[in-house]
Length: 322
Image (cartoon, rainbow, N blue to C red; front, side, top):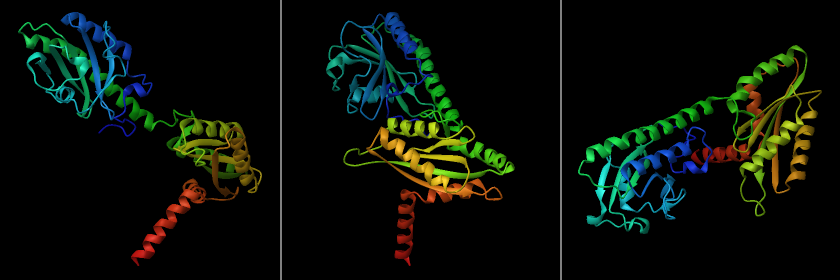
């Protein structure tokens, strides 16, 4: 299975993936073009929008540019992407299938499929207007190193995403993620208890304000993350818990400081973007308390409007069944 954060229907051009060296892919396209004395060589990815050109060799036309999308209803690219691993060599001049306008004058296409590590289709690499020398076995063999390179890069991307999902840092905000908070907060809480410190859990959730703002965007998440990090002290621990949720372990003088901190963060957020709403829940640890982090975390989270709404739906459903 692919990592949860790998979406095969999204073009790899949409994200800055350090594991995908597009310059190297382009150089390989140029190498294939020269070897086959072809018009152009390019790599196509099957996305939710259709078949998108990722990289291509240099050519004299405005065709096959990076980002060009062909309809997913085009039989040609479906056939090329789902062909056997050793690829396919098609004489288009004698073929009756419908072709996109860009390929109308193409006489021959040599292609190999590209697969994700789990065996699902990524797309294909294509060499157009190849010279037919009657030895397709040699042609297929010479495309194989490029095919392997592409699939190795995709495997490296998936491996990196798996490692990142297990890491303790959130790439979007630079803060701890959910896993990092669960790992770091208990130790910090126990350390504070040794010195008789009061502590609390603050749970924040971000909301849009329709119709002025219909949905939360990444920039809004980063904004709230920056405000929280600027508000807390060095000994406190903050984390990006989920898409629009943040959690903070804070050390305070008394329990009444918790709502004050929540109001301070809400005020700062409203000053920078008045189209955003902030909900907050909290739980308090007295110095002599033996309460564990997990139940107090759930207590703070349960005070959020979204959690209350979910609980009401569950209770309504149970009442209906009764």
